[in-house]
Image (cartoon, rainbow, N blue to C red):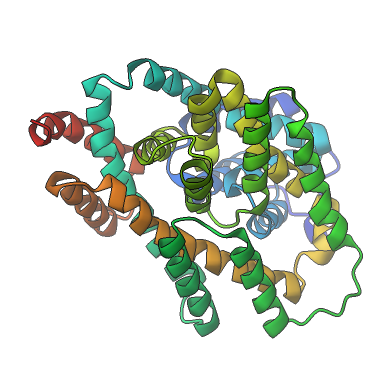
Length: 394
C-alpha cells in the first residue's frame, strides 16, 4: 500500500489515468445501490483499500467537505476524488460519469410513466412502491437522528421545531435551516469576523447556478431557478431534498400532484446513484427531455461548484469550530424536515389497510435486517402492488 502523504498531499504522480477513474465512476453510477452511505463506502473500499488510487487522508478530507457543503453527499465525494489528482477536468469527468447512468435511467422511466401512466399495471406498481418508500424514508430519518443528534438538547429542539413546521406548513422553509445553523454557530463558536473566504465561497456557487436561467423558455427558466435554489440550500443526506421538493413542486408551483411526487421519489429509490436524481424525473414530467436536463443540471451544478471552489482552501479552513457548529445546526433542521415529511407524504401514500401494512412491514424489515438492500424491498413492494391493487380498487 502506498503511504499517505503528510497533510493529505497527493503523490507525485497518480497511479491511474483519468479514463480509468471515468470508467470506475460510470460503473459505480450504474450498479451503486444503497444510498449515499453505501456509495461513499464503495468508494473507500475500491479506491483507497483495493486499488490504492486515493490515499486515505485525501478520502477523509473529501468526505468532510462533502458533509459540510449542501448537496448530495456521494456525488460531491466523487467530484472531490476526481479533483485530487486531475483538478477541474477530473472533478468534472468524475461527477458527470457518476450521475449520467442514473439520469439516463430516470429519462427512460419518465418516458414510460408519461406514456403508460394511466395503465393499471403502472398504477399498481407505484401503489405498492409508494407505501414502501414511506417506510424507507422513516427508517432513514431514524438513522440520521440517532447518528447526528444523539443526546444534544439544542439539536433536539431544532429537530422538533423543524419537524413541526414541516408538518404544519406541508413544506420546508430554507430560512429555518439557515437560522438553525446560525443559532448553533453563535451559541457554540461565536465568530471573530477575521476570514475573507466565506463570502466568496457562498456567493460564487449561487452565481454559477443562476446562469442556468438564461433561456428563452419560460417553463425551463422556472424549473432551473427552483432546482438551482434547491441544490444550493439543501444539507444532509440525499433524502433531505424530499421535503424541500414537495413544498415547491406540489404545494407552490403545482407541477405535480401528490401521487406523482411520491412516484418520483420511488423512481429515485429503484435506480442506482444519487437519490436527488429524482429531480430529473420531475423535470421530465413537467417539461419533457429538456425539463429533465435543466432540472438535473440546476440541482448538481451548485454542489459541483461548492466542491471545487473551496477544495484548495479546505485543509486550512474546514475544521474551524464555527463552520462545524453551523453544519450541526443545519443538519439537525434538515433531519427534522425529513421526519416531518414522513407524516406529510405518508398521509397521501398510505390510503388503506394494504398500504399501511406495506409501510409498517418495510420499517420492520429494515429494523431487523440492517443490511437488507432497499432496492430489493422496492422490487418486492412493486410485486405486492401488482397483486393488491386490483383487490383494493375492485
